[in-house]
Image (cartoon, rainbow, N blue to C red; front, side, top):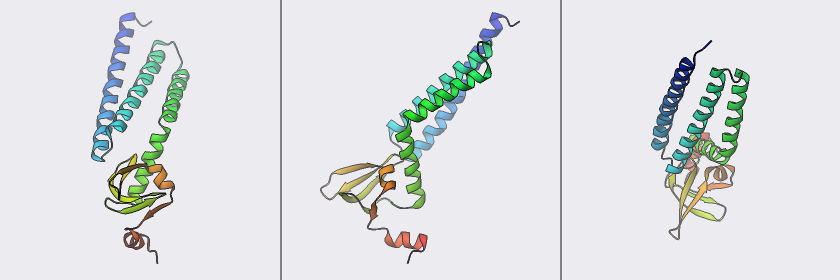
Length: 169
């Protein structure tokens, strides 16, 4: 039978390992997000999500390691936690995916003149979650990337660039 001391040492080592892994992954994601020009709020949201996942993994590990729960229960707890996080971050994830697709497709670049609904102006900032458009009045409109990707988005200055890329006549 496992002694209390061995059990405590195992739990502490497990917690330390999970926290170190979480911090390493969070550091890499934070660097990549900063390099992509992501706003500090998104980086903070990613950090919170990483900590929640780490806490759920620690709880599931402790329950499994101490024998209080089977591996199936620990897996179920982790799955419920992941589902809760994905639902909470659904809009953010949608905007990030749309931002990646807009970047990949080359639909908009900095300094393009674009029109979305009643908003018409020059693109002054592209980020993973949103795009900033400077209006003729000097005001800045911030539009989420999922809205831009859903269209209709008119790019007045990219006709030639997009025609060459996609061989449109």
